[in-house]
Image (tube, rainbow, N blue to C red; front, side, top):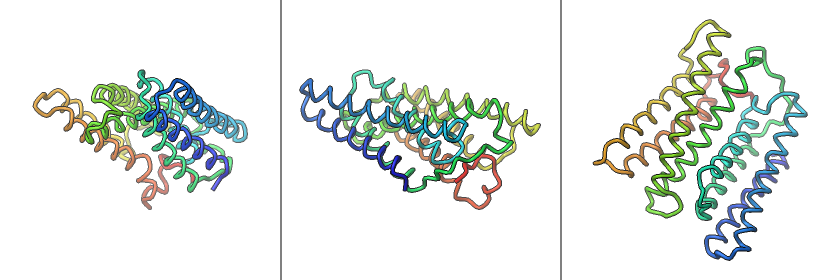
Amino acid sequence: MSSQTVGLFAAFGAAALSFLTEARDRAPWVRTVSRSVFGLAVGALVFVLGRVWVEAGRPPMATLYESILVFVLMASLTYVAFDRVRSPALGAVVCAALAATLLYAALRADLEALRLPPSLRSVWFVPHVSVYLLGYGALFFGTTCAVSVLLGRSFGSAELMHRAISAGFALVTLGLVIGAIWAEEAWGDWWAWDPKECWALVTWLVYSVYFHVRRQPRWGDRVGAWVAVLGFSAVLATYLGLGFLPSMEASVHVYAR
């Protein structure tokens, strides 16, 4: 377990606690402290990613550990972009979930500076991975709001859920297209029916159903929220779950561990 990741876990945990304190005490100084702690946590994450980039001599996206750090950054930026009213309760939930994600990363961290294999040394590598991770960050935020809708809580709203999922869906669609272009350039085939490609398509289809559901007034926001949760479950299966399958060992879509 790396000390730097434990430090990031502690930083986002502290941000969650500071937001929770703000939710109970709306004094201006408490708000300033909570925003400052969150900003310091994100700043520390950026510093760690920059350090990994310098030490490895490549973008920090080659291993599962590195990609999780980038995902946490993207999810943090999504929260800043979409929660214009800066709900402290929503901030507490987001930071707590991201702290748990960082704990998972700490348990699985591989800090060796791996060199990119030839298949990944492409101009498409950074756009494909970064667009997908930004999309996943937006879908994560949308799912957090969906859980709020399902629980009847006030820390998220159906409007925020829909805005975030709309942005996330557009980004994963772009990531899917970039991946197909990259595959055709590298291997001469737009689509190889790799398990991860198939699950990426499943994820895209589930979110397509979400938009269909949203157009049906009789189903309301709760049904859409359930589909959003199902969609993010597909994201987790695509991003993390498939890496445990023996059949994925030779796939170019499995992060180095």
